[in-house]
View 1 (spheres, rainbow, N blue to C red):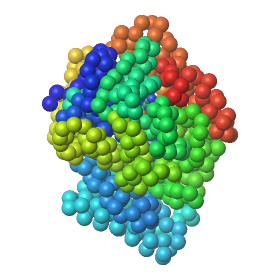
View 2: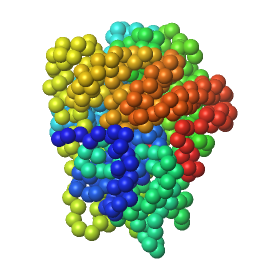
View 3: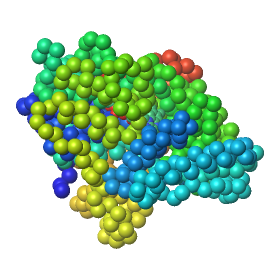
View 4: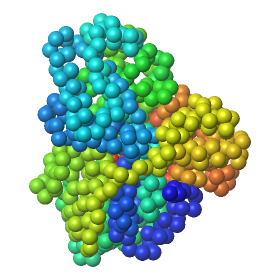
Length: 573
Ligand SMILES: Cc1cc2nc3c(=O)[nH]c(=O)nc-3n(C[C@H](O)[C@H](O)[C@H](O)COP(=O)(O)OP(=O)(O)OC[C@H]3O[C@@H](n4cnc5c(N)ncnc54)[C@H](O)[C@@H]3O)c2cc1C
């Protein structure tokens, strides 16, 4: 099956197609949930449109802990159903849906109380593994194991020997969250969905009480278009309240944003061959292996300021350093921190009876005919959320809609991935690239790495590393524009790649070359190219300054001083 190309002309064609004919479903929000809904609906044979106000995954879905996990904490709450559901999804993602983007990761849980804690944690992860096995499929991940202090120190010499008495090691999975969403969007487009970024819903079309479509502003041109739909599905995460305000009447879903901050430190600052998880007074702290870095997170605090780009404060960074240093032999300092990102959890609060809470984590509501709202949940269970939302749509559509089949739909790049992975030495020899580069490409594009390699064979300069961010090849920037819907510098540096959090200067020195490559692919003139670099650099400057501020309020004010290159209308700020 030929995968859809999200090139420069595709977006306007999609907006035109959406405006031209009524679609059965129009989805608002291009995070993991909205993208998952678009794929679920398209693979049931429905006509689908998807509009995203900024870049795909620019909201919470590029700012998570990047774990596909069952949620050990639900075991403590004895919520086995929820853990089973998430472990089923983990297994599907690892094996069939996205083996190129989701991979196993191990965590060491250091114990501080000799007897009861080992029994308690051991029973928890034992049950976790057993639940995974009881799904009737091979687990796909090694089982947990108990370690003495000495055994744990062999795996993680960075741990302070006085901070723990022994450990338990267990396995979960890790995902490149922004790439996963983009891949979902591309797969949905392959099955016929019309998808457009920088297209914001600014109003609803009505026939009496019924919602009959949306008014969409093309943020690149400022033009408004009416898009008609038999059913509109709202999947805007922490913006759910804003959408409810646009619809009018009393909102049915209450979403409370909670801020979570992560730090990135270079891999050599923590000597360990495994991830680490420790308890904090409110939750847990993860140290997660991420290429040449560790991701350390997260915080959990209420947030009522700017939702588009929540700011991390110095207090957030101090908190995380304090927590991780409690278990490390050599403490980390502010100088070790290369990247910082903050995201907002769409937590549900105070639901009214009219919503059907399909699990403890997410809700689906139909406040007026023609509109389905879905909110809450977590990344891991996006597919279940998407299925539940499209089931609600199907219920209201005339005619029979088949059940969800996304448990049998591999995402773009999944088909053929294992065979190509096994052939990486041959691919390296044929392309003249080092095998490590081929592995990097396969882990990011799956079997579509062949398209990137074809680009390199037609233009040798694209096979060179990107200067200022040499983990990536120049071809990846061009491919992001021609195949992956990237339209602005930040799309490439923050989401198609992760240069903005993986380099010490946060992508500033890679910005010029990236913009130049994008200019060639997207037809920018010198003025546009300079503007992109200027906006990006100012954004990073403001981000750094905000991270020196003690309070959320002061950090937010500084961050807002550097506007986005394509600002959204008020309702998405
Ligand atoms: C710190 C943190 C760590 C997390 N870690 C994990 C984890 O490890 N594992 C896990 O399973 N889950 C995790 N989660 C939860 C998970 O990330 C979220 O549940 C999930 O990403 C939410 O996706 P979403 O699609 O609902 O929202 P979003 O990704 O925010 O998508 C909503 C989209 O709607 C768009 N939008 C808003 N208004 C409009 C409009 N008017 N018109 C058009 N578009 C609009 C926004 O721009 C946005 O892109 C974490 C969350 C946080 C914050």
